[in-house]
Image (tube, rainbow, N blue to C red; front, side, top):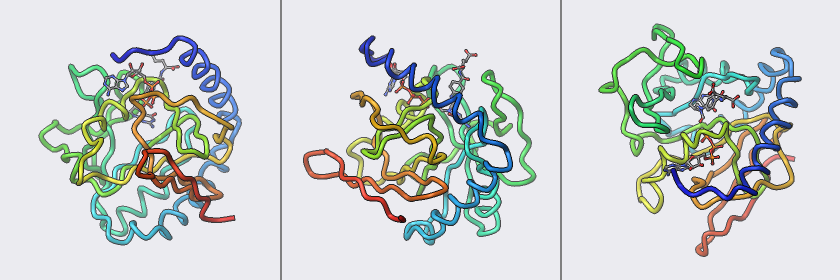
Length: 216
Ligand SMILES: Nc1nc2c(c(=O)[nH]1)N(C=O)[C@@H](CNc1ccc(C(=O)N[C@@H](CCC(=O)O)C(=O)O)cc1)CN2
Ligand SMILES: Nc1ncnc2c1ncn2[C@@H]1O[C@H](COP(=O)(O)OP(=O)(O)OP(=O)(O)O)[C@@H](O)[C@H]1O
């Protein structure tokens, strides 16, 4: 575990609680509609067309529905991968291939996971795009997750690497907050898709971030 500032942890916990409550008020019908709207932004993104391997996730705890995106990936013959908790490694993920025929079983956090052995996992650097779940985001590209550090720890080795997937958050517009404290281990996002917009975060040479909103 990396050192965590107790004040920052306290602030993050409060944001998590508030936004998870807000997210749980969204109906499943609204969630499916929003998932379809986010899919339209993804399809319009220039990197989607050439992407062959995309990691997504199965929505839980009121997350935006990923159903339409996963179905589209299968229709487009883009290989779709889902995260699976790495056994024995506290906060690491594998990404395993998913089709309509894939058997799923719930993990210890009650999220369904692909029932395949780890030798089926794709190497992370071979993924073109990772669509990441999140609890809250800000327009500078800071992401707040469920608090397990799974995505940050899994992607940490890619910092500074040449060949790495584009990492896009996938969330409801309602999950946008004014500001999220950033921490040294936070893995930088390239953008965020919501039902309303695509937020693009470009890295400057001094590793600060410039945010653009693609659709108004
Ligand atoms: N859909 C989806 N899949 C995902 C993630 C995610 O955020 N969304 N993850 C993203 O990293 C990983 C799982 N991370 C998670 C971390 C905490 C909890 C959770 O429910 N925590 C409870 C307490 C857990 C417990 O029983 O001890 C809580 O906070 O209420 C769930 C998932 C991998 N798969
Ligand atoms: N690269 C890493 N190696 C080991 N531990 C890490 C790493 N990155 C983060 N962590 C640990 O994970 C814990 C949770 O981090 P954080 O609160 O940023 O998670 P999160 O992004 O909200 O969760 P998730 O990515 O699972 O959705 C941190 O306290 C930190 O100690």
